[in-house]
Length: 188
Image 1 (cartoon, helix red, strand yellow):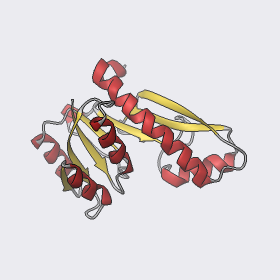
Image 2 (cartoon, helix red, strand yellow):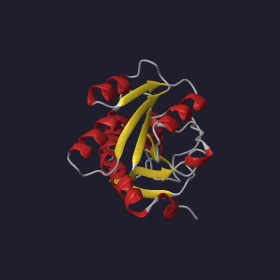
Image 3 (tube, helix red, strand yellow):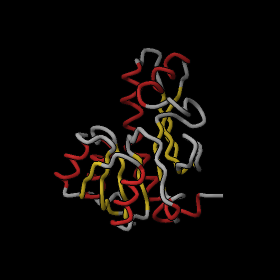
């Protein structure tokens, strides 16, 4: 399956994907990496790994690049804008969220905001959710969830590290499921 990675930052999730593709534990091929941030470190990493890498300022620019690469699956990897895919990819956008949806999600809930909210609420478990994205933040069909046990002494930074470790397992697992079962099998 031909995949595109959309990112806004350092590319830690791209690092994980690349390592797993090399190790043959993640299926699919990364055809292109796109960022809405011109100087995103993730773009430098993509080029170092040998992937085509582009800055695109908006959805129209992104979608033109995707069309040029015949993309079948779009992977949101720390992409901090609401992405609007073209009609042919409307159901083919995967996202990872740093909590167990439906908790701690929706507009404005991303990154450390989620982990601070988890700590403030005093929950005993959190985790991550890989889901198909739709036009509403964090509402598409869920593919994989991973739980993370929390300790009373965990800081928001500790929670972030634990959740990212779970994300590194969950996202490739979800991609493998999508490749094996097909995109349509996850949608009602």
